[in-house]
Image 1 (cartoon, rainbow, N blue to C red):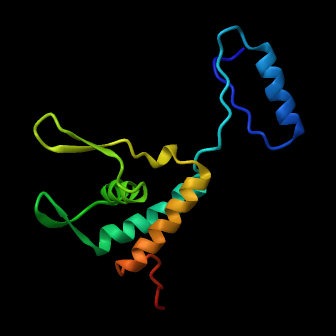
Image 2 (cartoon, rainbow, N blue to C red; image 1 turned 135 degrees about the vertical axis):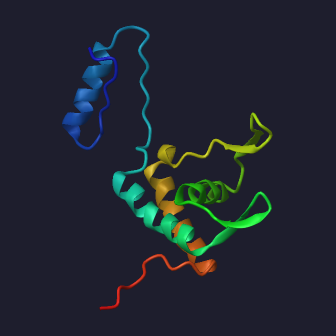
Length: 135
């Protein structure tokens, strides 16, 4: 048996294969049933919004108003989405490091909520997400 097998429970045969896999697994193996994590389409939908924030807004960083990268906006906005309950640690050289918020670990449902949150936050802050091209 392979070290790791994943079954997407989308029809009866997939469920039967999962049951068979459980029955054939060696003693001590672990079974986890969970909601799927975010989809590639959801991930792709997130980045244009984050890019819009990066292009259009400045944000205070180390006491100065600066343009942040889309990746940095993802850190700030995912922390806000989680009600900023992530933890902050001191960095090795005295800075601060935000711990724990990873959108790659979001469930499909949570990622849908996050994308809605991004759109709402963009609207509140005047960020235009999808600019129309004028011919």
